[in-house]
Length: 423
Image 1 (cartoon, helix red, strand yellow):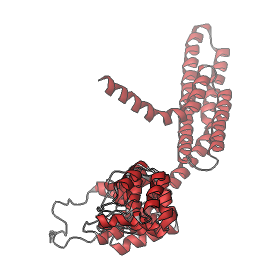
Image 2 (tube, rainbow, N blue to C red):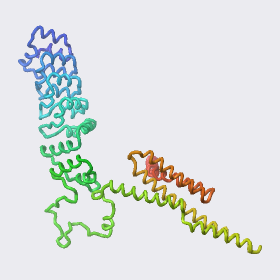
Image 3 (cartoon, rainbow, N blue to C red):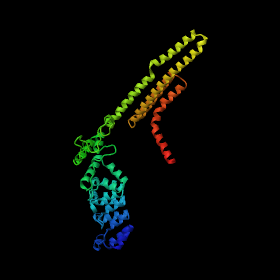
């Protein structure tokens, strides 16, 4: 290449470019004769001289489809360097088809953008040529795999937003078929679930059914349907694997417990909500209309004390007064224990309802109505039952319990963290 042309490309000197063209109209073609490794477009692209790139593409757009010594197209270089404007100039001159021109190792421009985490370039290339997002290299690597391989988190997130879940799974499965690496489709997580088990739990939309079908075709199974390795020996007497313990009573109890691989979280949530609602209903009714025998007992104590005071002599008056006070105290204690326990049950059930309805529509209105119900319950109960300290305690317990229960785990974590830091 003419050293003057090389210097003009490095500095982005457009005037020198046109002077050289006036002296030699074929200077942009003659550089091939001297076995140059890179054309002026690639050099200007590396230096990010947008105006120079624009002018040279206007004069000779064919430069955009010439490989350099490293097997890279000018678009590959611009994508790797993150020069968004130059990418736009090359796409305008060469057309969107250049996005899918494979170069070294079968990589295209979007692969170099992914390897270097160029999110803006990825967006521009996909906008110009959506099909380029599914291009794979000679090693069967897609854009998603290159993002993960080179730790490009933002680029990976950007790509996930452009695909739906079915396309992502299909890309992974396609890579599994093309590459020599083996993708474990039946891997089990910490909760003992495979990918198929998770889909069975969350199965709601048509997309979930498509995902399930794609995984099934690729050889994925739920944990309960996983084929047993024929090489694993079993005990012929009890048909158990080596090391497997016989079922105990604990296994029978576990059968009735919630299990992720068997039970639906949605159904469990609905069941808990129903039970909490029933508890709230029963406790609210019990607080407004408590068992009558508690108050009948108190009335009988008062009546008997009054009658006795009328006929007793002065000698036994003090003894009767002590008996009456003891009986009344016992009755008041029974009433207080009942009302406090009932209030705790109501507030706890209300707290569960509040927790299970997080994220649902009109949650704010539901929370206001529950707080108003608790306050009305507490106020009505305290005004018709023992007054003074008991009234204050009952109101405080009934109103603050839901908030305290919700905040308790968070407060305990904070305390433990503070202790660890101080230690």
